[in-house]
Length: 79
Image (cartoon, rainbow, N blue to C red):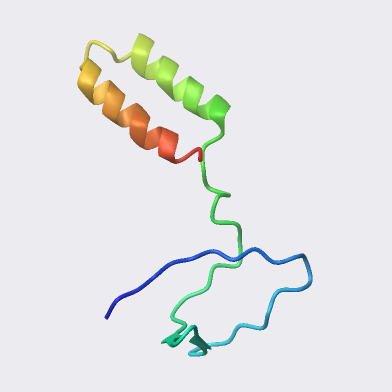
């Protein structure tokens, strides 16, 4: 069975009621998150700290390619 994730923003206080097993766009609701999905994302300042740590402290352990791949993945967490 396929699953699709999408985010809909509502004005505060105008969120629709949500209940277990309700139908949504022709499918069945299986989970709900009552928070902003971006709450756990890194702030740009946190990304800078991680980049600096990788560059200055562990650059001899982490090669340049791995450093780039790590930073690309971390940047996705700031968007």
